[in-house]
Amino acid sequence: MSDTEQPRPLLVIDDDKKLCGLIREYLEPLGYRVSMRHTGPEGLQAALQGNFEAVILDVMMPGMDGIEVLRQLREKSGVPVLMLTAMGEESDRIAGLEIGADDYLPKTFSTRELLARLRAVIRRSRRTEADARKDDEELLVGDLRLEEGSHVASRGGEVLDLTALEFAILGSLMRAGGKVKSREELIEEVSQRKFDVFDRSIDVHISALRRKLGDDAKDPKYIRTIRAVGYQLIGEGRECV
Image (cartoon, rainbow, N blue to C red; front, side, top):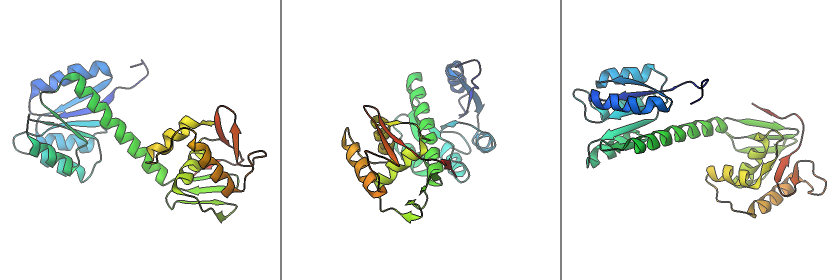
């Protein structure tokens, strides 16, 4: 972690104070700020009031157990939750995942596995939040308009008949703000939105998109090919709403 980077806040809810301390000792040098609570009610209150990147939650606690903590937490918060379960307690894992746990880890975990799973649930949460923002996005580039929420793309007020994949490619180019997008970048972005595109097939989809835009690859008004690099959307008045 750099000198200017802020520690990432985590909450550990577990009645085993020794284990909480070991988790803190391991994670804090790696850039996390670990808060600890040792009862279900205290942990739930902290999780709801704090701004944590993730919660590590033990299932087996006296009084309010981890399943109940998670159930009440999910009524008000989408914070990533990594649950700690006793070895072989499949019912706990299933119950936690059904209620909304992001992942689980047996209490025999290694520190390396804890870190890997923690990073994974945080990464997935950030990706989900970014996708949600995209769903509300409206993009304008010249006379092109793309509305993610209603899945409508238009040129000069005329609605374009795009496939879902062509819509995703156009959105990627519009969000690039005039920067060149390589084929690899386009493939990666549309693949994250659950499309399967490989290698040079992206060129075929670009050609189809050009036809529907009424564009000419030799004298483009919308999509310019940058030889051996990728594609660039050209136009004035780029903005995101």
